[in-house]
Amino acid sequence: MQKRGYIGALIDAGCVPLPIPPGPPDRIRVLYEFCDGLLLAGGKDVDPRAYGRSPVTVYEDECQPDLDQLEFTLVGWAREDRLPLLGICRGAQVLNVALGGTLWQDLTLQAGLAGHGGDGADPSPGHDVRIESGSRLLGIAGRRHVYVNSIHHQAIRELGKGLRVSARAPDGVVEAIESTGDWFAVAVQWHPEEMLAGAGHAAALFAALAGVCVPAQARAASSARVPAV
Ligand SMILES: [Mn+2]
Image (cartoon, rainbow, N blue to C red; front, side, top):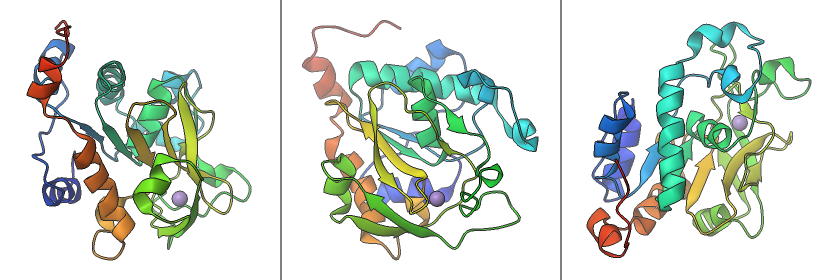
């Protein structure tokens, strides 16, 4: 979590934000054990080599492979523990890649898909998204069509294992994904933390995460297995 927006949104939803800085997995695990849920925030591009592709754009120097690995580890733990997860922008991409999916490295290189901003020179005014029926996201947002901001030049390409598309932009770009199973893992390509003043569906995402978080002590008490550190 790098921006005040995420922290403020979590506090407003009744959470106690606990930033997890990069570090060795054993130390990260100590912090993870305190968590009742996980927010994967926006940030730099995922290193394309993490999903078996060579970098095709100038954004390679924007990558942060150590952060990628940390967040892949966190996703793996969260999936195993069914720890609730909300992914935002890069966080949605991290969730997808951690589960074996791939990304469009640069939407501006794809015909008809350039209108999502995020390249620093051409900010997008935003766009509509259509939320898929039967999705968790529809239950959270409460309606099929919402208007969102758009500050990304990458997007979900091939889905990771156990994920489904839960919203698309009018041009077909995947704008939200979520777990198909009983794990609350919901991720959006837009930035709800920057939309809290104007859109009820933005605050609803953070409220949904807070609502499904089970206190860590109760989770430990209900489980016969203590995760190994
Ligand atoms: Mn977009």
